[in-house]
Image (cartoon, rainbow, N blue to C red; front, side, top):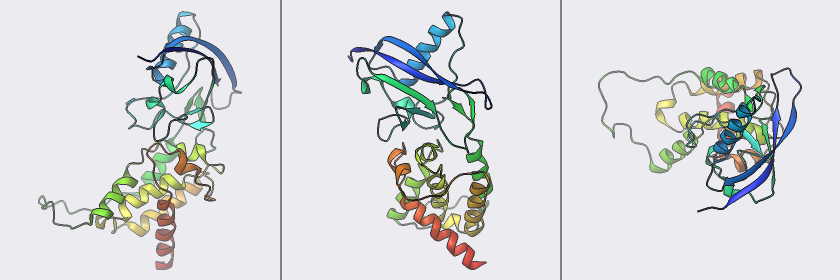
Length: 251
């Protein structure tokens, strides 16, 4: 069993989008190493409630690394120091007894703070909505092998579709760019024949919406790829650029 640790926790507190925020410091005592980071915040919130203080607001849902809601900046890293993991998959054994742990919300113009550690990621929903739908034939159920797709292509499309839309790429980027997210959503369709009908319309609409919502440009620092909890490749950004150029040339 993992040993217990005690540490100093510095948490960003902000009452609303327009309020001035600041760090508050809490002393955490004897937290088991097998406690997840979000469970640790639950323990802190129980203490705050028992002391008649306002609990810390933070986002979470599945706690299985799938939903992408646990958007916390931990010690300078989106989702924390663990590679290929979300905050809910981060365990306190990663830290040392006596450490100081700093927790912040995503820092991006595209993700305004709602309260404390919660940010508004509606912008990602709007970008996906701008991409529209995939046209399909709603007739009888086709055979599984009716549309042959190469194994390498199918795996690449699935790797792109692994993006959970958490926003770590935006938080890691010095420009606040959403290119990795948008490129993953474009790639998962651009690689497959089912996505070709609306391909040109999709890529133009999603990039236009991304620019409209105030996300920055990509300068290929690869910070997004390094911090992505699902290890989405920056090669998707190259594909996004190619798809966009082809769509514009078609016009």
